[in-house]
Structures are given as structure tokens and as C-alpha cells.
Image (cartoon, rainbow, N blue to C red; front, top):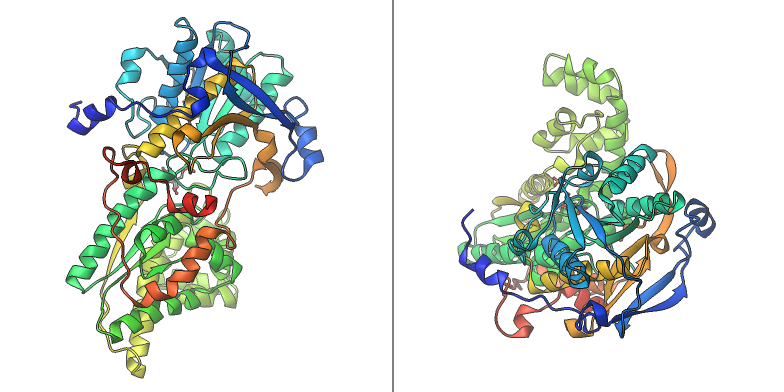
Length: 552
Ligand code: FBP
């Protein structure tokens, strides 16, 4: 593969480490803090994790390294959706491991958790690692969504670990993968395998955060990439003055990405799923909210605008969730075949009408035709509606168009409405990491090795104080069980890391709420431009608005 000039230049970038990690592995000491307990359901979590529950939080400090010296053979996997900076986690882990002892070994298991089960791996060396420093993507070893959660899988991992003499596994993943890391750590401890398990917080969705984890990696770069694109579209809209752009942004359930992009670009509209759910908004209410902005702007001669729609929005609309549940029920088991055998859409429509409650059918019936068909025709292997495939940007623009036609007929709306649609997701997940993500990820990986060297297991690599310059960041570790509670999953109570949704009383949302009425009517667009890597620190090392507002 040919190497671009930027990639060459980025190879030379030295990621910044927190002050206490900067003097090298031999000069890092550990300070143990308080004993921890889980955020909720303490007795249940304690019973499920007898060997790894209630451990102390730890912080690294400058000082002599007092860990017992032994050869380290570590395995690493990337799990779930790509997020910028993943390569640097591996680079930081590798550098710390080799700095401790050149004989230490790092194995990368390919294609996500399945690589560990199938024993499909590569052994890293300097040349291999150097080709991926400060680059985007997960292509160094690939990623996957296989879940490591069953006893049989853990037994296989135990055998694979024994075969390679692995004494630790690092799992780079989101809330589910780190939940599984905690369960694997407990298994390894309970079976006296000597294999430690350490997690690293990843996801562009930004929903793996809590009082200990200030941000998951990748969120910074992905939102900056989408914000650049949204800013460019705003400028185009403001130049041509003829289109409303409906832009869906990734974020499978939480709306952190949408909110951060809104704070960066000040669009006319940004929907926040968590608010929609809290206010129990209907599709008609959301449509009317957007149409109000289009109408006011149109009547003032501004027939253009930008609306940001979070990917997970429809699941937050209570009446829509109910509709989806009823459709899943309606087509359960053999009924899918019965439905598919119906000769045309009219017959299918009658079948749907007869099978849904009147309330849900009314919701179904106001949907644009394309979405109606999508709900019934594109289904997952279990026969369920594929909610993530619903083109919500089109859903809302079409509903707004219908609403505006009514308002025009009634004489209140005098403008013109023409829409363009976009979906920004994959465009940002493998971008070159921002300096922030390059530094944060490298630090997470380096720190993960320190946790391994000091013998910890079931911990998440934790770098905090990250809204400050890197030198002031604080490195340490937190038992994953501290972040867990019990939740109902697939009909069973399971210990899981709590997913962080947008907090409606949090500072980022409050800032947005205080400004959005003005943004809806006036043109207040801001154009963040491209991520900068070289130049003044206030341009190149800027954190997200979300983090800046949260940390004041
Ligand atoms: P993770 O939670 O695994 O980090 O992935 C998040 C995400 O990027 C979502 O924003 C998006 O809905 C999903 O992955 C898409 O997944 P896929 O890559 O499997 O299409």
C-alpha cells in the first residue's frame, strides 16, 4: 500500500503520556486507593464475581517500579465497531511491554474476540507496529462482534492462553466487551489460570463513560470528523440557500455524537433521543417541532437549514418502539412465511392492519411508504425489524414535507422546502486519530501494560483529568465490577456495565437547550474545519465541547 505524505508525517508524531508515566516503566510506582463496590446491586454483583469484586482503585505515581519481574506474554484483541486510535492503544501497550523487557511478547488475535477462540494471531515486532503508529482504523489485526460470554468459550480461551503461555489478555472494546472482560477475568481467577484480563474503553458512540471513565476513545476524532462535514454542508446550505439538509449521525442508542456535533456546528435542529423519550414525544410532535423551524425560516426568506438526527432516535419514540415490538410479534415464527407468501403490498397492508393494535396501526399509517415497506421487508435472521437500518433522516424529512404542505394549504407557511439526506458514520470511525485520541489511546495502552505488570486483573485502564493538558492526566485502573449493575437482557438478569445516555441535566445538554431556540430560527452555523495535527496547541489539542463543558 502506498503511504500518503500525512501518514508519513504522522509516523513521526510522539504521543504525549500523562506526567506520571513519562519517565518510563522502571520509574512508575503504584498507589492503592479505596476498596470499590458496584454502582448498584452490590450483593448480586459480589456474588457473581467472588474473586474480582471489591478490589481497590489504583493510581500510578512517579517512583521505583516495585512489581515482580517476570517474562510477560500478552494477547490483545480489538472488539466491536472501529474507533480512531485503536492502533495507538496497541502501540502504547507494545512500547511499554518492550521497554520493560525486550523478551516480552505481544500477540494480536485477529478479527475480534473470535481470533482468540480460533487461535488466529500474529506476533508483533517493531516493523509491524511502526507501520500503524498514529493511524486510524483497526486493520492492524481487524475487529469483530463475536461475544466472549459462554463457559465453553472461556475454556477455549484458557487453552489458547496455556498454549502460548499468555499471562494476560487486553480487550479493547465498548460496554458489552468490557462487561465480558470482567466475566472472563472472574473465570480466569476462579480457575487459577494466572491469566489477567484488562479492558480499554472504546467506542465512537461515547456511551461508555461514568464517574471514572471521562470519555471512550474515538469519540473525539469521530465527532470532529462529522462536525467538519456538517460545517461544510452548513456553508453549502448558506451559499445556495435552497436545501434543508437532514443529517443522520452514528450512535446506535445514545445521542452523545449528535449533541457534540450540534455544539460544534450550531445547526438549526438537533434531535436528542433521550429528551424525546423523557418527554414521550410522538412522531407527529417531533415533525411539528422541525416544521416550526422550517416555517419560521422559510417565511423570513431562508429556505435552507440543517437538522441533525441521531441514529438511534426512533427507538426513543415510545409509540414507535411499541409499533416495532408489535411488528416483531406479528411476524414471529411461521407468520413471516405467511406474510411473505401474500401476493402484493395491498394484501400485506391488510394483514398488517388486522394484526396491529389500532394505536400502532395509526402510527404505522402515517409513515412514508418507503419506511413502511422497510419495516416489513428488511428483517434480521431472528425475524426482527432492523431498527438501525431505518432511514430516520428520510423519515423525518418526508413527514416534515407533508406537514408543510398542510401548513401551506392553511396559509401559514409561505416558503419552499427541498431536502437532501446524509448519513455520517463510517466516514469517521477510521479517521486518522486527532492528537487527543492519539495521546489518549497510547496512554491507555501503556497504562494497560502497567496494570498487567503490577498483577491486576478485571480492571479497566483508566486515564482521567483528560480535559487538561496531557502532562496533567492521571493514570490508573478501576475494577470493572465497580461500573456494573444488573439489567434485564434477553429475558435474563445480567451483570453489565451501565450504558451512559445523554444526561438531560448535564452541562452539555443544558448549553444546547439554552441556545437551540435561537439556532432554530437564525443562521448561527459554525464551521469547525478539518482536524489539525500541527500548529498551536489551542487548535491541535482541543478536546470535545462535551468534555470541556462537563469538566468546566
Ligand atoms: P461500538 O459500540 O462497537 O463501538 O460500535 C458503535 C457503532 O459505530 C455505532 O455507532 C453503529 O450503530 C454501529 O457501530 C455500526 O456497526 P457495524 O459496524 O457493525 O455496522
